[in-house]
Amino acid sequence: MSTLSQLSGLTWSSLAERPVMETGATVLAFWAATRLSRLGGSHPLLNPTLLAIIFISLGLEATHIPYETYLRGADTIHFMLGPAVVLLAVPLFRQRAVVRISARLIAVGLAIGLPVGILSAVGIAWALGASSQTILSLAPKSVTAGIAIGISEQIGGLQTLTIVLVIMTGVTGAVLGPIIARLARVDDPRVVGLTMGIASHGIGTARALQISEVAGAFSGLGMSLNGVLTAILLPFIWKLF
Amino acid sequence: MLEQIARVLCWLCVGEIASRSGVLPLPAPVTGLILLYAELAARGELPQDLGALADRLLQFLGMFFVPAGVGVIAHLSLLKAEAVPILAAVVGGTAITLFVTMVVVNRLGFAIANDQGRATGSLEGATRDVNS
Image 1 (cartoon, rainbow over the protein chains, first blue to last red):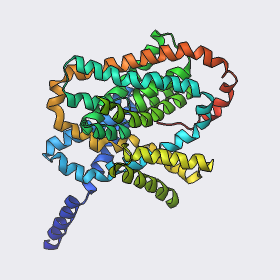
Image 2 (image 1 turned 30 degrees about the horizontal axis):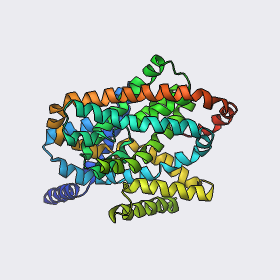
Image 3 (image 1 turned 180 degrees about the vertical axis):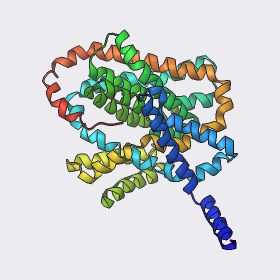
Image 4 (image 1 turned 60 degrees about the vertical axis):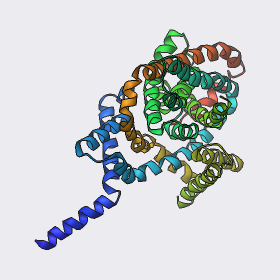
């Protein structure tokens, strides 16, 4: 009996010191979130990342585990963000033929969508009296989250706030994209897809893929190119002000 | 496969050095992305294992920003206090971006569509493997 309690004591302390619990909980939460999202027909409002964030937050609240403790353990998963963003080069490379063929369409889309995306968000927030920290966190909202937190850090925003704003933007774009396309009488899947990728990154791209393969491909391109270009341009623009 | 994992970490590492030393004002993974793309473009082909690695990892991209996203619980009061400007900027800004970009690109697209009419056929094959 004493050996057993010793053993369980040992197991518990090693669990607490190592990232097993936090990593496991994150994977489990995301798995449950993905299942729930599929049950709901993958509706953009049931975004798995957002659901998983809510699950974990509620769990931390219930167990009184501080966020810092959780993050130290879940750092294994957070770390994967870097390699995953580097690997975005692969789908971009696969689509190089499309980029070459539709270079002008894509260039025009980025020349309009990128600045309008930043300025409209920053302008509205500024006009309604948001704090400068909120405005800085909002600036990269249209960019895919892995890149957006890097930009947010560079310009002095709150990285964690940026992630949530990025997801909210993605969900908004995924819901409004097809509606606005109808209102604006735009039925070219290349234009609709590209715009949804530029305005609402991966979540918009997932929705665009449901419209058609062409829309999905252009959306993926819009997302990647907008991410890279915003990362290059935004810190420079910010220094000008 | 190990070679491809090493390749990705290697470019990420170069990006990390470039960004920490202040050589490039870019997030490290973005520099890594650009360098990996440049390498692939120079080779002219995609190693099969690298493609498999990307497909597998990017499938879970949404999970990788959960830990950082949970950090927003520290800023709930800020979210509540500035709910109106934040919601207006996110929803309004995204709607404006979608509308303006679609309308302008579509208008200019008529000119572009002509020199691309024959491109649509070759598009079909190229669009297969896009995800997330």
